[in-house]
Image 1 (cartoon, rainbow, N blue to C red):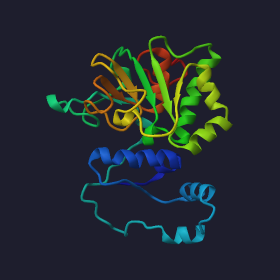
Image 2 (tube, rainbow, N blue to C red):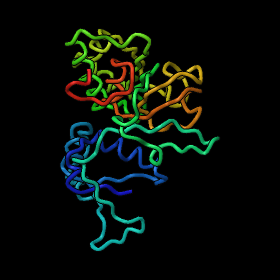
Image 3 (tube, helix red, strand yellow):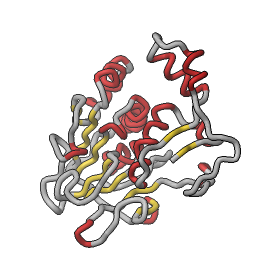
Image 4 (cartoon, helix red, strand yellow):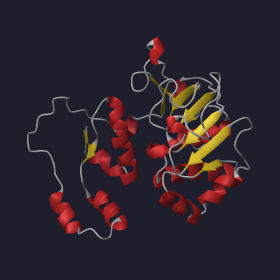
Length: 245
């Protein structure tokens, strides 16, 4: 899958990485984003040894008039509403995202037991910043993680954790009741804290897959980092917004 156009320019390098990561969930081999200054600035800031003139010269783009057998799809980002992917159950023929997703404001009151933010899909610096935004708002309102809910955040790498510590996010998370996990494979592959233990438990998670048994026997909804964090404080699946908390 190839991503481009004016909408792409509104996404950070981290957000583009998530987009490409999720492309495989649509049965794509990989996802590719058009190279632009946002990408080059990101590379230069993290890989100072690179010759950026050379990197720019090595960028590739589609030939003029290239034909896409899968079609060209135009998405107006301004019309996108917060969504979740329903829990999947291949044994019963119930598919996961994207064919079984729903708008959050249409799913009713879905109480949760676990909120999990992390993995390669949602443990990057920008993702941690989203968790911090919600946690800061909660702290200012005197809120902590809702009783009966376990909210886990797992850093995507040591570098990400270092950034969180330097910006004060790490302490912020602890202040509001988040359970922090060091970098490594975790609940995304059914390992470590954040995995459901019974079929009755409900999880809202920012990982990339939710087929049955992926992260324990419970029901797992996929959502954005903002939704995961908001839900941890409300006790049910809620999208982030001015009055979300």
